[in-house]
Every structure is written in structure tokens, then in C-alpha cells.
Length: 228
Image 1 (cartoon, rainbow, N blue to C red):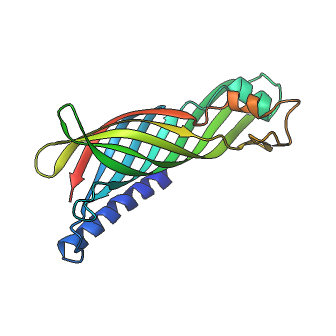
Image 2 (cartoon, helix red, strand yellow):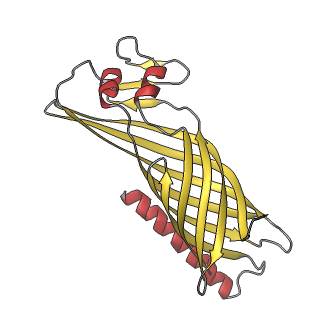
Image 3 (tube, rainbow, N blue to C red):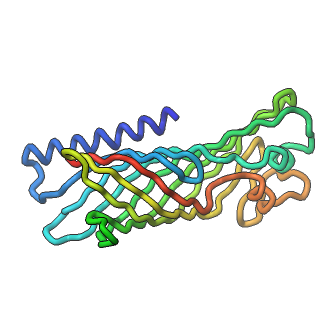
């Protein structure tokens, strides 16, 4: 959590720095910058800090968008995770928690839909780091399953002007993450069928079914944007 907060602060600080440089006359391109915060659903409760740059050149319609997010997600099935990554023991009361930290880089194109005067279709690359923790109270087991995923995604993002430089922002989209190695305890399963210290005859398919790492991720978030 500390890392994502530091990353979010870095994005905001960079946006303020660039804006100050623009106001001081160091930017001759007329580029425009904004930064904001989104809250909502992203395969769980999610928070995202984003920065947007546009107007790189006269008549150039595209904008660039950088986002850093943190989401609380379903870690998976504790009994299945225990069998696939450790052993067949069933003692202890299972507890679980999962989270993803993700980065997105998008290009946006303006569109006219309904009464939304400032709407953009965005698309780009994703990178997510997943961690699921499984704990068995009274069973002497507490372990993490981790994975890192590249992906692609797209969204419709619309800005609704409020007072001053503030906008209300609505973001709806869908991300897809490619399969990746799942590592937990001293065991790892790879999508290509190889495994390190696998349990019994379990394969990547079994590990994939047991763990809630990101794959398809629907997004519906609402937040604020500040135009510098």
C-alpha cells in the first residue's frame, strides 16, 4: 500500500511540476495537462490516480494518459490453493485477501456521444502485479501466491465540467491480462506447462482455477479531475 501511495504522489507531483513549467513559459507547444483520482469497481474496490496530457500540436486530436491503481480483489479458493501449492491438510480456519497494483498507458481519441462534449475512447497497455495471501488460523500455514501480468485495455472516459478547473469524471472500460507464472511457497506453475516443485499431479490449469489473479477486468469508476 505504501508503494502505491508513493507512486500516486509522484504522478501528481510530476503533473504540478509540468504545469508550473508551462505557466513559466518553458512550454511553447501549448500542451494542456490535468490530473485526477478515480474510485469504484475494478474487479473489486479500486483506486486510481491518473494524469492526462493533450494539445501537443495544433489540430492534433490524441491525448496521452498514465494511470496507477490499487485494487482489493478476491484471492481465490483457500482449500484449492493449499492443495495446489502446499499439501492436502484441511486443519485451520481459512482466511484470504488479495490485491493488485497496476499501471496503464493509454492513447485517447475524442468522440461525440449523446450529450458528452468531452468524451474520449482510450486504449493501451497494462501491467499488473497480483498478490493473494492465504492464512489458516490454527493450521500453521500462511503463504502468498504472486504473479505479474502484461495486458491490454480500453475505456470510455468522459469529463463533465464543474466549478473552476474541476471536472467530474466517469470511466468505464475492460482490461485483459495475459496468463503468467503463479508462484507460491516453494512452488511455481507456468502457462507453458512447466512447473517447479509441483504438488502431486497438479498443473497450471489447477493453479489458475484456484487463484484469483487478473484476467478479464471490467471497470466502472467515478472521480475528479483538475485542469492545470
